[in-house]
Image 1 (cartoon, rainbow, N blue to C red):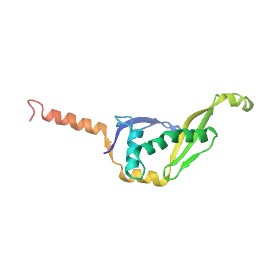
Image 2 (spheres, helix red, strand yellow; image 1 turned 180 degrees about the vertical axis):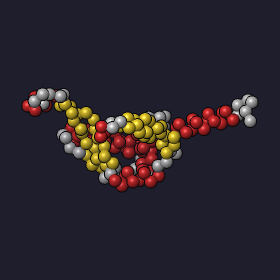
Image 3 (cartoon, rainbow, N blue to C red; image 1 turned 30 degrees about the horizontal axis):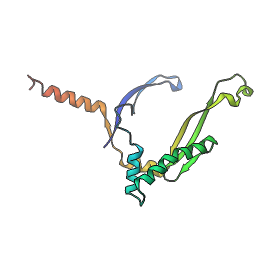
Image 4 (tube, helix red, strand yellow; image 1 turned 30 degrees about the vertical axis):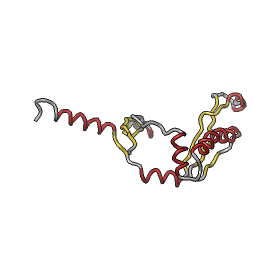
Length: 148
């Protein structure tokens, strides 16, 4: 299987010069997400645990991670990577106006462990949605009535 991508146009205005660049993005037709039940089943197959035991751990994992993130701590899971809170606040005119009641967690960041990222990069293939559609359209033209 491959990761589907599309090519997207972006305007680069750095260095005072406007340049048009094209980048691969994953906004196209992504596959159905893998759910906890499937992960539990796969982990049970690779261990001595039952899938119900693994599912119990997965269910509790988000709560345990949240407790530590709530305290501003980074959670490091060996072989996977680090989860960490990122914060932001309202814009204010003076530093002393940036009080705790104007700060919130913007998102939870994740930085993959180098070995985990390497495992994914080695086996990953990519497939252009635009090229697939163009090939289908070209094949349709060749098979259309009256075509040679």
